[in-house]
Amino acid sequence: MVMNLDKCIGCHTCSVTCKQTWTNRAGTEYAWFNNVETRPGQGYPRRYEDQDTWRGGWQLKHGRLVPRGGGRARRLARLFANPELPTLDDYYQPWTYDYDNLLSAPLGEDVPTAPPRSLVDGRPTAVTGGPNWDDDLGGGPDALAGDPVLSRIGTQVRLSYEQTFMFHLPRICEHCLNPSCVAVCPSGALYKRVEDGIVLVDQDRCRGWRMCVSGCPYKKVYFNHRTGKAEKCTLCYPRIEAGEPTVCSETCVGRLRYLGVLLYDPDKVGEAASVPDERDLYAAQLDCFLDPHDPAVARAAEESGIPHDWVTAARDSPVRKLICDYRVALPLHPEYRTMPMVWYVPPLSPVVDALTADGFDGEEPAALFGAIDTLRIPLEYLAELFTAGDTGPVEAALCRLAAMRAHMRRVNLREPRDPALARGVGMDED
Ligand code: SF4
Ligand code: SF4
Image 1 (cartoon, rainbow, N blue to C red):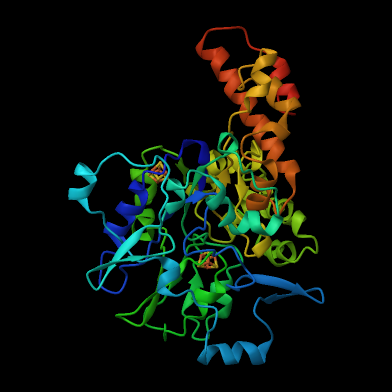
Image 2: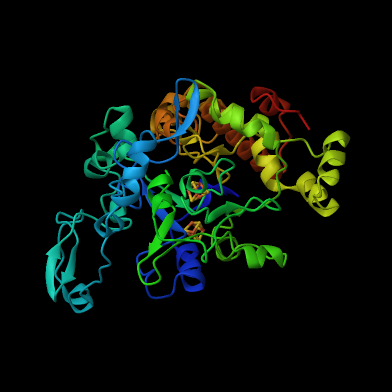
């Protein structure tokens, strides 16, 4: 899946329709297979990106790829006391509003000054946050301070409200090419389907060890405390099998979720996941994807049992175009080394106003090309989310998006095309 972040309005329709379909049951009240988090912010579960606390994914040790969280003895110890499990507080307590007060309350401060409160045993009790509480902090200093990505890279916190930024990041299970949840399960209950790469939990085999919960760096496996089994996003596989899109894709208000087929070389995955420099992981994962137009690839795919329809679908796949051809989609946290398969078109935030004084309207690529450092969302922040800190691919993607936007405006206004736009971003002029 590829999600275009410029189009997400944070409405949570995807979360709610997913919940109605998959986790509307006892034991999964707190579980959101699809969630939409506010950036900057703490995420869901809280600070899941702080990998020093919530271990997961893989790390390179002495040139070998090993699950994060220590050696065999430590992993065995974790079977009995799994210290890296998020608590219910990290998933947040649900809260409601005092609707009577909401309608009759006098005018107050514009910016929230108090943390949210939830009803515990009938009494309002302060909690330290909640899903999208960061929205209400408006990207201000408190939101920035709670964001683990910013804390890690130490980007200078922007204290002025005029310089704040905010966007939404919808998240599902990444259905990784190199899934650590599968690797850590002592019961062999998690598996990646060979036919379509969907990662599933075999409910009959699951023994409730919860190693997958701590072992997933994206924290996308949930424990059902009623059944004692792990559960996770299934990429709506019954719908996919029937040729239907996932529920979140079908109901997305912004129409920002693209589903499609990508062919990849399984022999390259292990090698790609263990490149020494994590900044090379984006390019290494790209290198795993195969060109379905290549007759040798198409022949090999069909010989290995992949239906002809799928090879055709891979040729027309919007996902392949966005990732491989246009290079405007990027993986989320490739440094976890699980080779995630939900990629994102980064938000093309407006260029801050200094440039408009020079005659640019902030959307012309000329403004962007010369002034990438003045983007409202810091380039380093996006790079830390999508390319393990390498700003190059993010900058290139944003410039392409700006060029496309300028080109389409010319098309819509029936103005002459400008081939320099395509040349400026290294694309074919057609
Ligand atoms: Fe497994 Fe999904 Fe986590 Fe990847 S994102 S490790 S496939 S649960
Ligand atoms: Fe964003 Fe679409 Fe989900 Fe709304 S439904 S929050 S636009 S991904």
